[in-house]
Length: 140
Image (cartoon, rainbow, N blue to C red):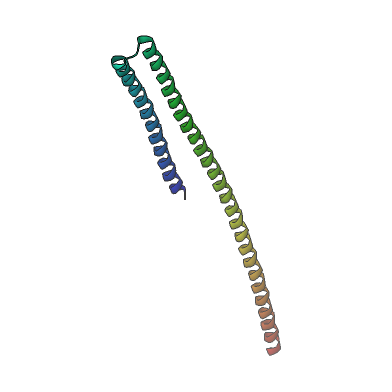
């Protein structure tokens, strides 16, 4: 069971790393796309310089907002995942404690049964011995 959890944790770490890498790639790609778009817009725009600069500023703000939103969503997803893992671990620990308690009770019951059976067996042996002694006395 412990090995399974270690393997599962490694898999989740790889998944987290993959998601982080994807977010970084998205941010870099967005920044590069924005730069290329801004350059193309400046070179090919039929608008005046001021209008073009305003358009570039607005697009940059939009891209920044998109990247921030994406990063925030990833952070929230990571927090949710972290909370789920914590809750699962807590539940698993509680289940282990419950099983440990149940097993201890089972062992205790078994020990009590063995003691009771042993006492009954000893009582039977005592009876047999007493009967044997009585028979022996009668024979003499």
